[in-house]
Length: 337
Length: 187
Image (cartoon, rainbow over all chains, first blue to last red):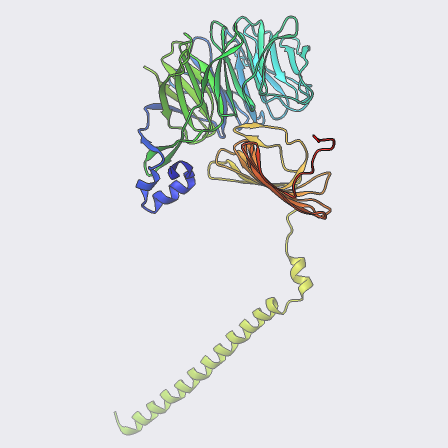
């Protein structure tokens, strides 16, 4: 299986030398999928989320912008923010009234989508690579570099709660449960916090490296986690146990007019449930968007088209489309029907 | 045309040819003199004057980006926190030197000195995880580590000699010099 060890760069070089058949020994040629491409970011797109109703989507990126898109046409409606420095994450409430975003300059941006008013929250140590706006839009959570999770009151801007983590054990993944009572936060161990009491109600252990993304299912009974350890897990929260473990395989690259996949495993960065909870989408450094049966872990679909790592995935509320953001500066829409 | 006229014309032609040759020699001599003068201005310029005429760029950081604008090389004092798949992680200590990034913009290699403790090191990383480290410490100890998961080796040299340790999936395959027996071990 020498082909499995061949790097994409080496493969491209061999392709250039006319040794294409050798290149494909370790991989399989695949067809490019039908897709829409949204272009507008001038840097890597680090996060994307579809707003409730499915009419609009919001993205943020390393170009310091937060962009509002018409999710039906892919038309860029407006920049909600420009000059925000490198932005790493964006989160919306359950009504699509507000979004929160965070980045390298240590500020949390709150944008009111009705009147486009903006303000910032700050004060924690360093920067937060993750942010989560509560479903009711009243609270926003962010990691501080000292290992604590800060919860701000969005209206007053005050820090109203500090969930005490381990000293200097900061993380980046955060997610509110759909009912807003539980905050999931992870470094490699996932902690489920009862927000009202400020106590950990459960810890989920199994990942060996940073968790990059957390996503609750719509009914709030399952949690998906995507990790730099190359694994994606689905957790049954009632039992506190892993119910599905996925190891997406394949690194997609474009050579000589075709997509080729190398069978290697790379860090996972994104996970999202479909609204009905039946499907789980994952993605990562492999540039492939995978769609799985969320109950059995059976692979349903693979979408290839991004030319760099994929950073986030989101289903449309009706489940007909899947949206992914990438460091290739684009957002792509994949048809699931 | 009579003979006298022909001779007169021939004389004129010869005179013109002589004049033309003289002018050619004169132009060549002028060009040679110009070239020699130009050469003397550069080759024979005093060394101190050459150094002083150059411009030294002084910056705290220099970023080289690819055609898409993705940062691929960064030189800085200090360098920035590592960007890994679109998010910055804390470095855990200031470093100054050169960093290399892949086409995702993820940091993959560094050739740096530590700020605060005078080590110099060279690293090679997978995505988000270091796999090779070559380091020289200020007192002369030098080490090469290469690892993947629980497998790897370390080769080091310092004032006490040379040491080598090789492990495979957590099991020690080779250790030179042999690890000292634990004190108070089984009798």
